[in-house]
Every structure is written in C-alpha cells, then in structure tokens.
Length: 248
Image (cartoon, rainbow, N blue to C red; front, side, top):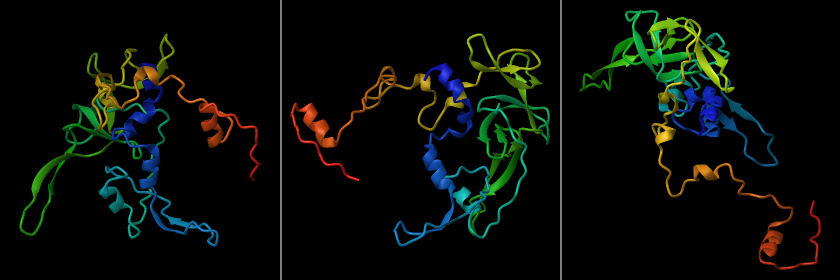
C-alpha cells in the first residue's frame, strides 16, 4: 500500500489493529435480544440494546459482552468530540496526572470510543488475577486508561518536549502531522500499521494465493449484459437466435 493511501485511511488505523472487517465489528457490537423470523406472516421487529458500554475490551471479546448484558444499565458518559484524531500506537506522549506526572512513554493501546489511550509502563495499577478459593491469584501490573483531552500531551521527538500536533498539507499535497511549537513534521509511527496478521505492510511477503500488488489496480472483471447461459454460450462460440422471454 502506498504512503498516500495510508495517510488517507489514517483515521481508521487506531481501530484496525486486529484487522477485523467492519461488517463483523458491527455485527458483534449489536446486542440483539429478540428478532422476528424472516417470514411473510411476521412483521419485522427487532429488540436490541440501543446504547453500548465501551471499555478496554474490544467488541468481539468476552469482557465486552459481560459489560452489555440486559441486567447491566447503560452508563451515560459525556465525551469531548475529537475532530481529527492525532494519537497512534508508537507515539511519544507525556503523562500529565497521577504518580507518573511528567514522565514520557509510548502509546501501546487505543480505545477511540472513549478517547482513551494506554501508555506502556506508566499510570499502572496492581491487581490480582485468576483468584480462586485454593489459589491466591497472580499480582499483575496493568496500565490504566488516560484521557487524551487532559491527561496526556504529545512529545516532539526532536527535543522531547511537549507540544500540540496539528494536521497540515505538505508540498506534495499529503496530509501530515506538524508540531505547533517547532513546525517539524512528525510522521505516523510504523507501529500504527501493525496488525495481528503482520508487523509491517512493507515487510510482508506475498504468498502464492495472494493477489499481487501489481495486479490490484488492474481491471479483472468486465460487466456484460446477458444471462449466465448467454455468457457461457458466448464464451463457447454458440450462436442462438431465440430471445428468452422477459420475467417480472
């Protein structure tokens, strides 16, 4: 994929780490309690959860389903709208609250629905996991979410000082991030393009069953007017003068 194409789809990068199709994400996010059968004697009715609780879990994970069971109410949360998303995996940020205030870390997890990011090794909390009656559990250190509006700030890699990033266009017409304080271009980190299938699209090796990159832009299908039978007869040089009757 070319750099210009990557910049055009930059807004989708925070959600596409698991490389899941959008139709699958929409299907698992919907919580349908009852749906009438697909028959002519039924009026189409669907009872579903209108408001979804979002946390650190992805929509296809068990923790997300546990947060949206019928007996758990919807917690209304007010978020400041983000016009242009500026945070990506691999960005250097400075923490502005808590015990790690003033420390610099790398973004390693993003929840765009809540304006949350997790910084590697900072703003952590110790919790016990897998605790049972016979096992005391394991003490695990986990990063806690930080709100991008007031809890963190970008860091300019040139001098490692906090700055605000804004989107601008360069001489080639590409949309890039620019430091408002120094005016330097801060590219999107390579970690932002990583998915569960491959680390980086540039180092991915094409497999025998993959569509080659040089063939992606080629037109492999030409639409033709005719039925399936007519297409077969045309490919086999079979002439037929009769015209099929129209069906309505």
